[in-house]
Image (cartoon, rainbow, N blue to C red):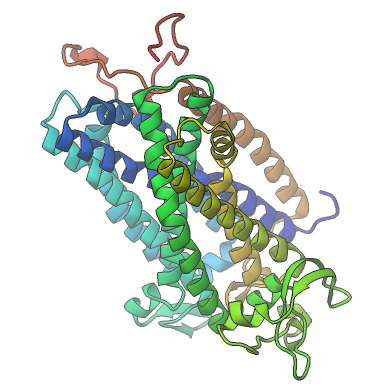
Length: 472
């Protein structure tokens, strides 16, 4: 396909499938915690708006959860089909870590998900809230184990290589490897930010359409509080993560900064824009700010970092790609900060729900969190290349012995099936969000035959509001 090798096609296929998968767990993580807060506020204040919002967003959660599970199954199989040599080499570490996720997070979610989705009128309010807390805890535990596995591939430790295979010798060092705390915090907060922007965009959309209800105002208000508080925290976490990456993966930092060599007596400029040319070993058309790179990257005036020319050409990440994915992530992060600060100013002026320019801005920022997550993930994974386990195993040595024709065929099938399946799911979810929250109707008198059995059954069959029935 297009002259690509089997290795390149395998990487594209994995990148394609994980791009679909990562957005669903991100929203699921954020929505689960949001539902805990909504139900807790309902139990505390007995304000019906929190109850109605809970029952609205739990439907969206159910759809995301189902699509996340389906897309996640494909990722597990790909380790064995497309990356068999990696599985053979490092499976003694990645296998148990993913098994721990199943034994803790999946079992916890499976035990309480049904109560959370279908037990509102069947169990006591305290037990139902406890079930919601357990499901939210399960999503965070899942994040813990997934990031532990992936972070070990970035900064491996706690192992020995015996007979050509990795053997764990210290599980605490394996799990709590040097990059793990930073990457766990960064990803978790990113999920909360993405969810807040999604919820805020929903509230803004309804307000722009004239649906000025307490529920839509509460949605927007809670989302903007989250963005205003969490966006600056995320920027701080990102800075700490950058310092950690500079220590353990300096080639990645050099690549995402488009920095090729240090000039005697000169500090680092901050390159805002440019085009890193891997063959010419230079960043063309660079627009830069003198001195600022040293301060941001090293927290010292005149500080330097290794240039890409200090690494062998075969050990350099693709700077052309990660230079721009990193800037997409950072640029969106500062837009999130601006959105949060603007919301605080409008809240102070009592115009948070009336300012149409702000509402349009909030609506446009709806997908920004997910785009930033994808851009950050590309930066992390492509920046690790050419290593699949950093400094230990090269990506070219990890791929299975498939032909380019085989990889082209399966990639094409994945593209068609993913667009059909997940395109339908996302379309349905957006239609549900567009409908907006309704007043919750007590279904306690429904018979046993109407009890739902699957997560997707928590979503309604009919999402088109009947004419004249909406109460704004």
